[in-house]
Length: 203
Image (cartoon, helix red, strand yellow):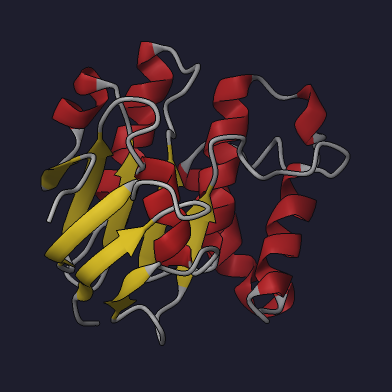
């Protein structure tokens, strides 16, 4: 995969002052990028622009069009009434992947992260830390080249944060990019190949 190029980017809600301005920035494969800044600085808005959920007021974001992108929102994006395995199957279906063909890979993920005996447990019965882990496994199951996470450590204790950091470290490769928002300095220090991007981004 190539770089994600952000060029002459601006975004504003209802013609108000722009929340984001960026003349040129690139996300390079093999790196974990942490977007840091105060609440309201534009981090989540920027993620939505990268994901195509919002359109820039000006400029462009390129290089993502033909990539496989997985997103883990701050609220986890799981269905409480479904089991862990059912959530994974549903996520695979959104990417036109068939569980039968991905079964071995899914089982390896569940085993690696010690959830193979919990696969049929309903998400509503999981702790917050477990839900965060399952949300990340759902994203990893589709084998994305770009992984985007919004405040992945919110509400997690130190042990759960360490496990999340290890999971991201095992995922990153020269052919993958991770972009996450975070305000947790200890978590950021624990990440491998971490590049910090301060918000708001200015021209």
